[in-house]
Length: 416
Image (cartoon, rainbow, N blue to C red; front, side, top):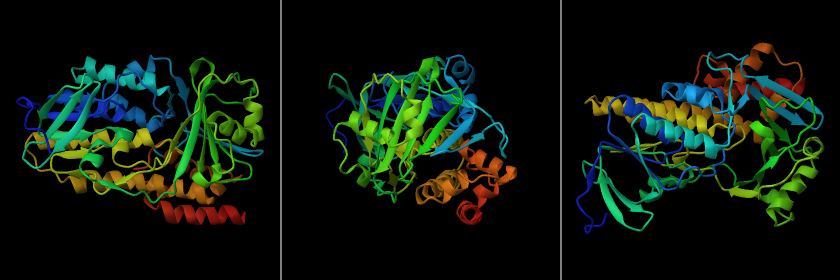
């Protein structure tokens, strides 16, 4: 319930919670269509965030928001695919050689810089962003949603609007305030990660690709290596909570122990300068009871987060932002919009595609496909499209029927 002691509420058309990629894209697309938009962001940018390896499909939405030229000029590390290593096995997928039309390249970014760039681009296009302002209460019981906002100095004010888009990411503002959170069906996993000056000297290492490494003995444990420009990398491990039992409590020592068990990574980072404290993120998989309700919709991680293995988070966030902005524009113009049929259902289609391959990664079936030698070039192009983020293209058989197709393909690879 909102406080009755606050001044008369400020009146706005749309309030976006969060200035990250989903919030910046959604706000900009609405502003470009002529709508009044206010973005409220709890933190001050730049700020650290994980999720640094973008997929090609992201650039479709960056381009739609008129930000592509600025992103291209920012000096981020180009990325044209994904590489996978397990013991002595190595394979890679080139996003320029894929089934679905679209960008064949993207970037690997330090999110503090990337997110600030997108937010600044939104502001340059007329979007008002207020930093260090936190939503502490929300009331959707009347025709106009009302939010109670707390500034960094502790003072509060109210804002009323016609619609709220929650792009708060892991903050999950509306799911918490409106009791929308639902348990995820994924096991509890934990990630340990850091940034290093990598000093990689191996000439075979491809800085234009993310490297995903499977632990040599524990197939459900994997590592990411995300090269940045200027000789730095994001390096992390993801494992079920039980895999941390008996390991060092010190995060730095724990991550190093995992890497020491993986010879190809030990060789790769033998000269690295570990200059950033190791961080931990656990229990990140999340779900909600509904992606929308009267006067609001949830974008990206504020609604659901699967797993970082295929870097799908920012792609899902940006796609949901684009979809929601288009639908909200129509609604604000007086059209009837079916948010379930036109937003939740089609968005979930792509999320469920990613889900099938994430589940297949951890049960080993998709790893059998990834590491299989001699796969059909046509099938590899279809898989490459999914790894590039085009998980909504139902012309791709591995999108249209992800679970059945993956099961059959995995059986064929295992037999071979």
